[in-house]
Image 1 (tube, helix red, strand yellow):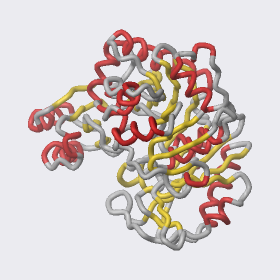
Image 2 (cartoon, rainbow, N blue to C red; image 1 turned 180 degrees about the vertical axis):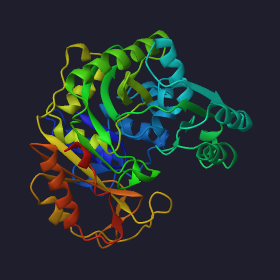
Image 3 (cartoon, rainbow, N blue to C red; image 1 turned 135 degrees about the vertical axis):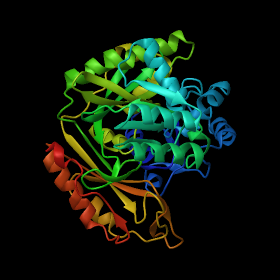
Image 4 (cartoon, rainbow, N blue to C red; image 1 turned 135 degrees about the horizontal axis):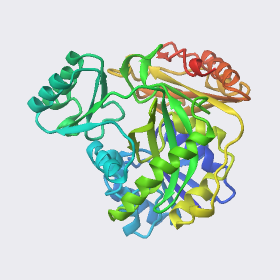
Length: 422
């Protein structure tokens, strides 16, 4: 099979790494890719949102399967465009991708399907939103209704924080039109976990779960980011609870989407809060998480490419995805100044030394190759240093050994990834 992966981050590097090991693969492309991905795939200089150009490339290269990484091209209609050209794409249509593109749409699906989630209201008027917060009090959650690269959620401990979030999203438009409307929710409490399922429109199979660390600083301090690290498995989320959430949250959503004429195909990511009342949905995403994808791909025992093909063919009912009985920890290395103003251009040394350590894998995200072939930082989240082991403690020790082998003073990471899970 000839495969085209779309995207350029650590998630896409992990997907390419996993697909490259499939005996079904004959040629792997990635658009636009990055220097790390170039080691396992041919990178082509086409942006993830250049949908027309991606379709032409896929036709010219006779691509058998397109694998989208990020959410933005799916919300923009990548799967629809590929389907119109007769090219299989393992991702949801533009209509189904509204599960991530609109927080209020997801809430409406939950209400219709009886999926447990936080109480919520949607507002297009900032004054009405502020009045609601004043009446309800804090803690309370403010969400930009549209896409905000994982940063459009504020868990406000005080009314002042909530009002400031409304001002930032609706008046100052820090997320552009994505914040023109906001969803305000009750604040759920408990451990937060990420559950991933592969869907074919009618059925779903469990991929696995992981726990992400969203805030930039140790001890979950500072602003939300795209994710500073992840680990799998999650001790507080055993297999029987995973299966229960698949049955009570993921499959009802699939049935509702199908009934509404928007069958969902691809990876469905359920962000869950394990409350005292049981698991409740925080949000759906329509793709793998980053950095959760990195640790899950390291644990994946089954052939990812065969599974993605089965999802496209509607044949998941009898498909089984299995994970190795190991643990994986991923630590994100970010550029100084992230998430507000990451510094670009600094050289990253020690990559080969780190990758040579036992059971360490490095996935590139915001990197580029300089003219002298030096790898330099070119984004906010730059690398994910991952490691596997027989348990989380061992995997964590190995991952941080990989971090410490790098020679990159302009980079930083959290030092407490998976610390609470060991």
